[in-house]
Length: 336
Image 1 (tube, rainbow, N blue to C red):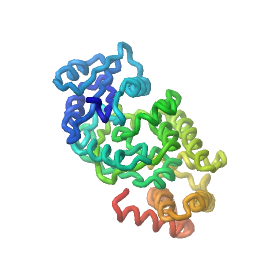
Image 2: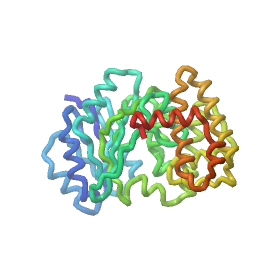
Image 3: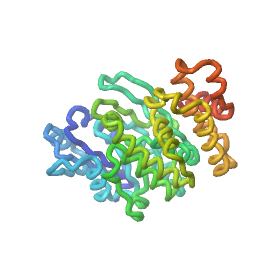
Image 4: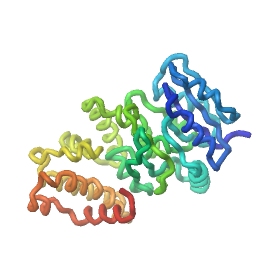
């Protein structure tokens, strides 16, 4: 029987967590899948762990040399036989109902080409950190894409046909943000969706992609800014160099809390968000509440994360009632 889902799981020196990650896939309530484990030149016990599993759904692929994550992902997808591609990392845990929920959604909604979910992030010692929520509907996803990736990479499921028919690949030019860049292009071919419920437990380690991606600030800025400009181009918006610098700062909370109000004054920030607000109101005239919700999330973070730097008068001047109300509505709905 041809599998409906091909799970792509790259593994490099993954002996510490690989077994539990694989177990979480093999324990899915939806069973019609193949699991492609790509051993990317590991020097530890990764291979023996893979071979310890006696399950015909596992397809073991061994890179003689370490090709890196991007090449391994592209290789895995090229070998996949399923209608849908599901991503999985070697140190995360998929909830048992993940595949069943995702494949049911995509089968019942043919205009959607990709979906992912909220995640629970936890540390190496299994201490739960927090739940991370994403924009749910397609419009909110597209607005969010100008700031950062709108999907949880290891919980993504997408149509392989879109990937193949349009000659898409993870690009080696966007290391540590290869997923974000791919999704910006992917959304040109159909709609996206995020489950509000947690379908994956995401392990934060010093070697995780988000941690590694923060090593070189300037390199990360150059990479993310290029992707953001592509997302802006998709919606017909051009920003100045200063605006692009500020947009990059809004990509991560750790940058938002470091806003320099001498460079980015209260008036500048208000004008910047007014520009985005007006553009998205015209683009989505029937969905303005979603515009306020997504933009308001970033806007409120600027105020909350920098409240010790701001006077009451400055906070009052910075207030945009539509965006603040949108952000508060988001919080009340549990989409943090």
